[in-house]
Amino acid sequence: MAVIGIAALVEPGVTITKVGTPMYEDEDALGGCQTSRYESSGSTRTNDPIVEQHGQLRLADPKTLELSDVPSDLQSGSVWKCGPSGPGYAAEFLSRRKKPLALPEATGTPISFAGTPSGDHLAIVCSNYQFVYAYGSSGRLLWKYAAPAGTESWPLRGRRMAQS
Amino acid sequence: MALAWAPDGSKLAAAHSTGELTILDGGTGRSLRTLQTAGSVAWAMCFDAAGRHLAWGDEPYTKISDLASNAPDVVLLRGSGIVRFSPDGTRLLTGTADGSLSLWHSETGKEMLKLPRLSSAVANAEFSPDSQRIFATDMSGSLYMDRTGAAE
Image (tube, rainbow over the protein chains, first blue to last red):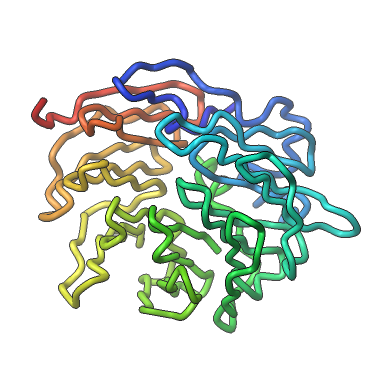
């Protein structure tokens, strides 16, 4: 099991309050999220979204990753979630009030994900790799950016880091 | 693709599998600037607190680009899978898949501190809010902590 999310471990005053949560609670549920498995399988496991943010990742089930324990130096409650939403897959953004918001336009499995510390901005890339979608904290689509031609499926950073 | 926001949301960096790294206006999505890696994907990206500098991994190097000027990139003589600016912006912490952890002066690109190699790939790394300590974990779950040498 891997421990990630160091930001969540460091409180103001430099006190380690937690040693972290395993990224994967169940290796069997990992489903190809490590590079070794990814590469040996030779196929992209697009139903395993990886979410990365300033907190801890938890694999709630094979298709849902949740971010929790947002560090205290971030504004409270910036909780993000990527996972299935209705037919197919879409991303959900849980606002500071933890109300799920459907994100318009983005379809496919979210495969890359970033938010600002304040939680005011969210950007995702879905499995079709065609656009970068940017949303505000209300879930409103701010803009979308067409990826350059030739951008295609690629192992995620978390997988890459697990390589050696 | 990999994504990284400037902390204030003013910019978004998007690294593509083509090797391009596009800096987008966070408010409009307009492309502000395109950086080109040596061929690899810049998986490791991090803005400084002001959103002016972007550190990015470009095997076999790590670079720091000043997005507010055309100044040459600061080149760090090591690649990275993890990059983190210190909160005060004076240092950059890099971690690699072979467990190397390095602390750099972000303005000069000089390595400031030799750190013990972790037992496996660096999974994550972070500064304390006062920039005086660094924390890192490796894929085995070990937690590493050290001082940065910043003035207290």
